[in-house]
Image 1 (tube, one colour):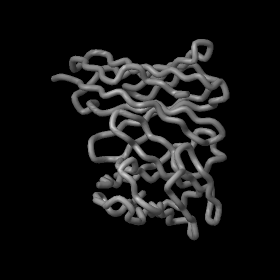
Image 2: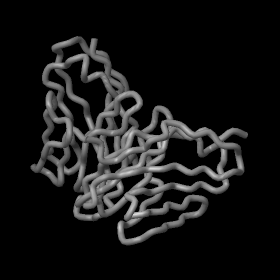
Image 3: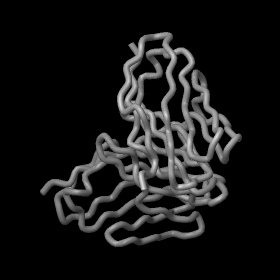
Amino acid sequence: DQQVKQNSPSLSVQEGRISILNCDYTNSMFDYFLWYKKYPAEGPTFLISISSIKDKNEDGRFTVFLNKSAKHLSLHIVPSQPGDSAVYFCAASEAGKSTFGDGTTLTVKP
Amino acid sequence: NAGVTQTPKFQVLKTGQSMTLQCAQDMNHEYMSWYRQDPGMGLRLIHYSVGAGITDQGEVPNGYNVSRSTTEDFPLRLLSAAPSQTSVYFCASSYGINLAKNIQYFGAGTRLSVL
């Protein structure tokens, strides 16, 4: 049973607009949530995280929102840029061990 | 700093062959892990280590062995390769599993095909 789900395999947005990537989880014991970004032929790189006791964390163009009651988090990218085109993985951590979603491929069109 | 280095980048094996995927990190990280990524899927944890001499199984450990004799190195051994092990393998390291956030640093991956 998949504990972390990213239900949208792909997302396409226009440059300058907002990108919203979603992630759902089932395990209420997760204490940290992280987003990683992956370019082709490279390993994932850490993007942004949020603690389970927070509902929002912002870092430049990237904001992560957490809704614990709905077991849902989202990553907002504003404004989106062509260089943001990549696969984004949501990960949930329990006692330091991470479980990853299947990823969402974001394409930002110029 | 080199970060996390994986070798080889590509490998083709025949069914039944064995091989070792190498992983080294130069950040003095305590926690190291191996993941596999199949097409359209996320990263699944194979084995992990919280420090030299300590290893444990992840979600999909069957068919793989690991050891951690030094802080820097964490090799993954395929005992008898099967086509189901065709995948991209990522090694990762982090400061420690005791840090709740446990941000992981990944290598570039090894693309393995088993014929």
